[in-house]
Length: 119
Image (cartoon, rainbow, N blue to C red; front, side, top):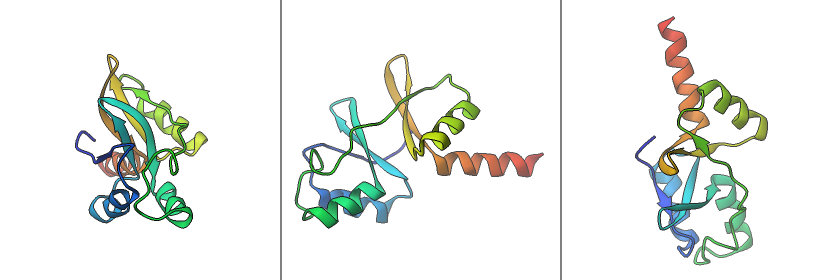
């Protein structure tokens, strides 16, 4: 996906709460400038709400900063296997050290269903 919602680390959890209602994304990139700081999953949002009020900043109270990124030239099969094995729902996609989009498990499943229907 090249069109996706992002959050800022200093942004409130309130904005993060509203996003799942507006978009089918599996998670949201938290960006500081052009750099991806981390990924905020829908589960992170729920956990954050249960521990804090919605006016708390997204970071550091809510985010777990362990995330991966993937290079655009990596095979979809390898990406899928990595995401499945590590239970990752979303990854930022980079090309020449620049983020060009995101990929999530829903995208991969849709692609596989379309591909299967074409065979």
